[in-house]
Length: 429
Image (cartoon, rainbow, N blue to C red; front, side, top):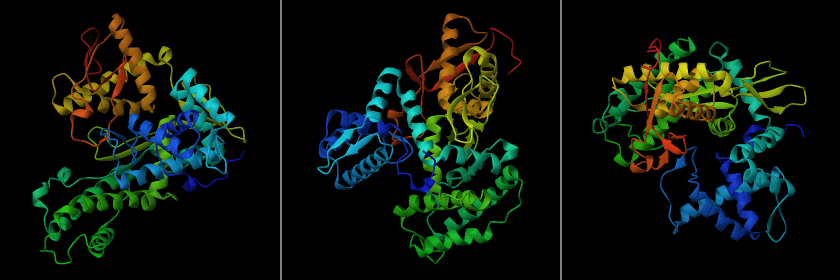
């Protein structure tokens, strides 16, 4: 089958886990309402939200009407895309059944794990959409000097020195917008090597806020406090979209772009982070290539196209990549620690993002390599010493969504790390 479907026609959900919980629900039930009931339970169990982040909070058993509508919407979207891939069938009585392919996918999950299940899904999605190759071509063409890296800077009022209580009037918002534009112009020159004036675009977003009754036309007048988050989100989304459409000349909407980028992240084709150390904004970059062949053992073939080219993800093996990985781990650890002025432990997720970007590997590959390194560390077979701890569980915060995935090491989630190089040399420090 050729990839003929437009990328924007993909169903609107991020997590590939949704395919699994739907197939598992249909394995146990056939009547659509019963399948939906099981889907709801598993959706909460796996903490799958409507956004690109997993949930930290539970909606509970007694869902509101709005929550039910959101659950139903996602359910319908997953059902339709699963039918498109011939994973399930539906008869006239609204009975949902697994196809032979759907049964094979579940067997693969049970025998080989979720990553193998995702690999099968990736092949189906590429058959239908060709999205991963399309995105990779776009990244490398748009940012050839930076190996496909795209940066979407954004700054909250706090990050620009404004405390919440200092922003109350329309004039305060305009002051923030002006400072934001000044900062974005600097970033554009730094990252894109372009000199761009954003005054006209800034007027555009301010006028939109006024037209939408979020901001008073009178600069001295206060806006409604409950609109603060909506105002700052509108400003952020406006500028991110401007970067995508105008500066990076992407043909897709931000919603389509995000859907495919975050799906590609789960496959290991593209990495994306909104929490790169000492960077305000989102970083998106390829961790895969499309070519006829590669002699490097660091790349794993996951798809073959009709024109003979293949999709390779950068997935180096520990046996041949150990020294390079450890060197980068140490280098980035001391770099972050020195900038933060910390004595020992630093955030493990921050270190992961720095190492992934430097080596152009996926977060899944980072976790595999770190587990191997830690195993050697416990056996005393490493030239450095690593300590991993849990500082504070995400559940212990007031957050609703998990915006930084913790790293699973030695069977447990860890979120802080310390490295001692006294066993070897300190050249990397």
